[in-house]
Image 1 (tube, one colour):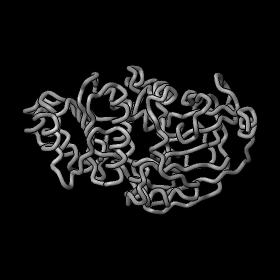
Image 2 (cartoon, helix red, strand yellow):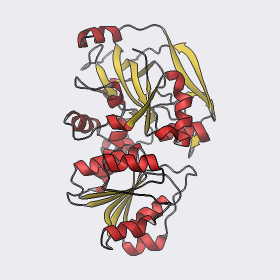
Image 3 (cartoon, helix red, strand yellow):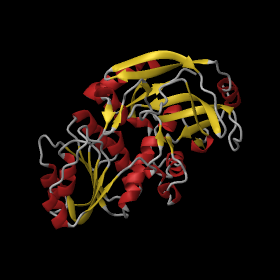
Length: 361
């Protein structure tokens, strides 16, 4: 099918759609709902692919992330690519049938943080799949046109969806102000940790050390971006990384596991005067650090809040083959398999790295 034929196909849509609703812990139901109508400045999108994120798994297993609680049925999902099928009034710069990646965060554009260039910190942000805002485990969704980024020819739906986690990784590395030649430790070889490693490598990290207790992920990390992958169940990460760095420690440590022990491990593996970037989401909503460690080392600690202004750069990095997203995608499932994907990611079974929900064309 040619690009023109594909666009014409995507412009056709019905008035009903299928969507996966989370009703409560471990309770996902596929339901038929009306296709939404775009308002002024919005576009109707036919969803192409949606990545299953760790935050989705938190809502599935715990019904909440911090104070954000599932109190009524909600559609999860926020990592996605789509085709534009209909415009609301006042939309320009996009074409019907155009293939786009979509920023899932709808910031207000007017608050202090938005004006200062930090829309990821907007206190009024509406984020796809975060209660009470519906996400995109559905056949169609409406989003602001400004959140849609046209993709070059050759991008697959899965690559378009994974631009969102790549954007988070890119934002994390930018927060660190990494310099070429810096040494990096990453605690946790899930998709975000792996992408942080890949971005750090592309930006000139001289060495990337990763820690990961799951053998499949540890092996994947070694083949994908890590110079050394460490099993924290058999080795003390701090002792091993200090040994590998001649006792100095790394310049930058990225915590991407969300485990209770990993923030402190990040503080231990980094050198005196180094930086710790916390990207993981802890299940118990608590971060534990020994004050003496971070104070005596004089560490700079930053926390990752989603991303900001990353899509154009992320698209270029994939287009120029600086980052390869395809190896991360280990499992592809239909919309009816959302619950199966959540269970798989909860148990880390079948060598799963990244599960993607593919919509029927």
